[in-house]
Length: 295
Image: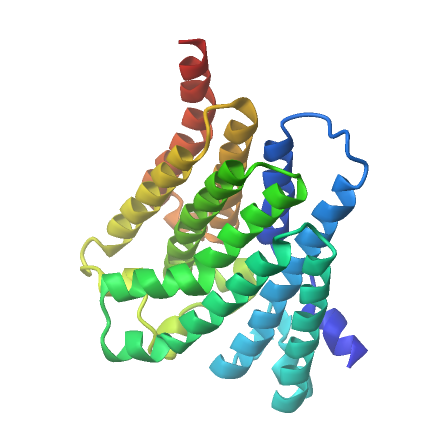
């Protein structure tokens, strides 16, 4: 059991715990006089990563996925019954970490789990009656809500005011939607060797994605447009200050890294439209907001 838990916790991109840390830093805006803040932030980051990994373990059971992060999944190594228990154990420890973080963090963490479970239950309805709107609702619950909660927990751990927590949560939600659209693209054109997992899993399981739901001729460009729209909304959610600009720049860099690391060389030219969307969040979060501050 311990070996399987360790296997499940093999580091991935760590975007969600990183978002906790970045959100806390943006909320603090400078040196923190509270010596306990670092501990609260670490506990918050741990709580969302444990929640994320637990849902991956359970997802691999549902999807009968044999590979996760380039190695055998927990269900492949230990079987269904053991994988269920490993996932449950990670959830219990994640809840404990949230409780050890900030006041309000357990409620946010619990909401994320609730939304992710509700999103998973919507998968059947999405498959039966696919539409862009149904997919957006599914992706918001299944993926984006955990990014929203990560940003909120970071701000809570930093002791931020409620309006800052809300703004960071809105950023996280739109960033999470952009991340899901990028993930849909990579599931279509990504390099499985670079990604450490097979591509086309959604198509094999009959789960519609933004790519499959859009017109065949321009679906990749259309999905890039969805990414750009979400990144615009993410940028608009943040207050016009330098710490928030740094949070926006982190989001752009994180998505660019994920895309560039997973895209085959032959498709690099096509990615210019996405690169422009990343540039928009990265540079406008800094230069445009700095100009607004000077005005």
